[in-house]
View 1: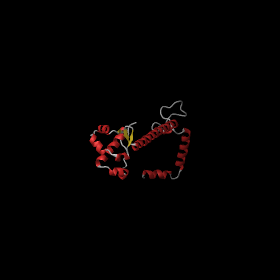
View 2: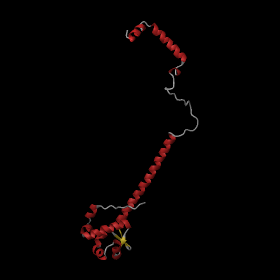
View 3: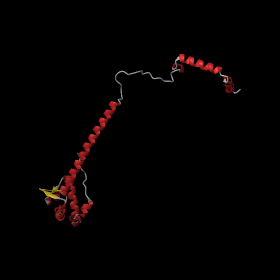
View 4: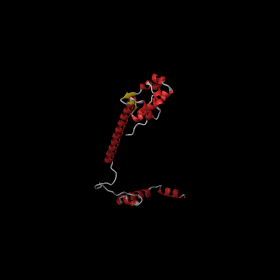
Length: 181
């Protein structure tokens, strides 16, 4: 898992802190530099000479700027200065990220399972086994109209209709009228 490239810095809380307000600009600069080093590297050497080398500063600059005021958010553990507050933030973040990762993996598995269930319920692809019923499709472009009608029913029905039409008294009138004469 990648390291977290940022840390939360609550400006309102920091500005309201009495030790921060009492620091000079130089001391504030060293404090935020130490906080960033603690986040990236886990801590800095507590010996001022080693701290100066580590930070790329002169011993004089570090000696002048490092005071008890910075300890409001930094703690000395053995030969290191660390920030317990930042370590707590890192652990919260990593725990949250791990939970989200597990949740995402679980969600992906559920999605795959639903897809498998859908495929089982509505299979696609090459069918297996024998088809039930007729596989012949009727295409009206290739069938003559008399192929779809039973001949006996057709002849009987047509003959009855023609004879009734011919016997109708107005049949001749309609024929005359439709021809326009």
